[in-house]
Length: 581
Image: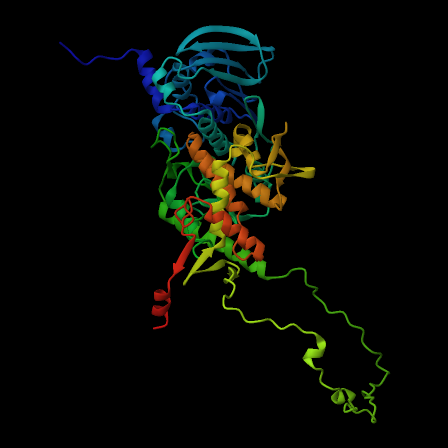
C-alpha cells in the first residue's frame, strides 16, 4: 500500500504560505513591493491591531483588468518574468508569483483594482477566502489597486498563536515599511496604525527622506558618501562620529532599490570608524548600491534579503575607501574656520607724512620710598582686645566626608577609608526609588510653552502604548494628529535637549525588549536613573554629600548597583601599609 500521497492544493498553498508569510510584516513587504512594481507614485499603508485584523495597501499604480485580477491569486502567476534567463536580469522587486497566492491562502482578501487606461469609472472587485475566490464583480473605484488582508492565519490557528504581542508585531511592520520607503524617495508614502498617523513622507531628496524617517536630529549628522566605478555606483549617507548606536539597527544597505542584509559590506564601513568611535558602538548609515543585474543573485533566500555579488571583494574595498575618504574630508572641514576674513583691513599713512619718533614722558622727582608712619604704631595687647582663644579638648570632632576629583566621596570610617563613586551611588538610589514606587517619584516641571518634537517614527508608536510610564519620571507628552508629540513637562533641571535624548534612548531600549512588564520596568528604571543621576565631574556641597550618603546607606545593598557595578571600596590600614612598602 502506497504511503506517499500528493497533497491537495489547499494544504499545499498553506504550506507554501509559511515560506513567504511568517508574520503580518511579511504581508506588508510583499504588497508594498507589488505597488512599486506597478509604477505607483503614492502608496498608503493602513494597519489595525498590528496587522492581525487588517492590512490594507492603496496605490495609484497601473492597476489590472478583470482577468488579471483573478489570475494573480494563482500560484506562480507573475508578470515580472517569462523565462529562467530573466532571473539574472531582474528589474523588479518581485518575480516569483507566490505572494498573493500565499497571502490569500491564510486570510480573507479583498482586491479592488482599475487600470489607468480604462475610460469607464468602474473597476473589478475580487473577494478571496482561504485561497478560494468567492466573488468577482464590477465596482466603482479609483485608478490603481486597493488590497485588504483581514484576519491573517484565520485557518491556521496554531500559527496565529505564535504571533507576538502587538508592540513587537508593530515594530516589525514599521521596519519593513522603512526598508521600502527609505530609498524610494521618488514615491510618497503614508502609514496609519489604528487610525493614528505614523508616517507621512512626501516626494523629497534622499537626505530629506532620511531625516523624515529618523528625525530632524539626523539633519546635521549625515555625511554624503558617493563613488562611481565600472563595478558599482555608491550613493548614500554615513553618520558623523558623534552619532553612533549600541546596536546595528540603523544600518541600511540597498542594491538596485532592494533592501539587503550584508554583514561583509557593513564591516567595510565600520572599519573606517576604527579609532574614531568608542568600542561597542556602531555607526549609522544608509547606502545604496547600483550594480548590473546580471552581477547579483537575488533568488537565494525566500525573503530576498540575502544577495550574492559577483565582485564582492572589489565592492568591499571600494566601500571601505569611500567611507574613509568621507570621514577624512569631514575631519578636515572641522579644522578649517571658513568664516575667517580673507583680508586684513588697515589704514595706511599718507606717503607725504614722515614718521614721528616715539616720545617718553616721566616724572624725575618721583620716588617710591616715602615715609611710612605705620612702622611706629604700637603692638596691641591681646588681653585688651577681649579675644577668646579656643581651648584644647581631649576629643576632636569626627572627620567629615569630602569630595575628591569631583568624582569620588571619601568617608573616614574608624581606622579605614571608604571611597564611593558618586555617580553610581546616585544611580543606585534613584533606581531603587523607581522600582519601589507605584506612582510618580519625580516631580514634573511644567513648561511655559509645549515643545513639539518628532521622535523617530520607527519607534515613536511605543509612546502611544507606554507613554503613561513616562509620567513616573517627570515627563508629560501628548500625541498630535501629524505624528509629532508635545512635551508639556520635564524633570526639574532637565533641558529640552536632555529630555528628548532621554525619551529617545528609552524608546530604543524598549524596542528590543520582550513583552514582560517586569523587564520593561527594570530597563525603564535603568535608563532614567542613568540620565537623572549625579554626573562625574559635578561638584557637591557638604549638605549634598551627606544627603547622598544617608540615602545610599538606606538601600538594601549599598555596595553594588543593579548592573553589578561596585559603588564603594574600603581601604584598611593594612592595605595602606602595603602601598607604602
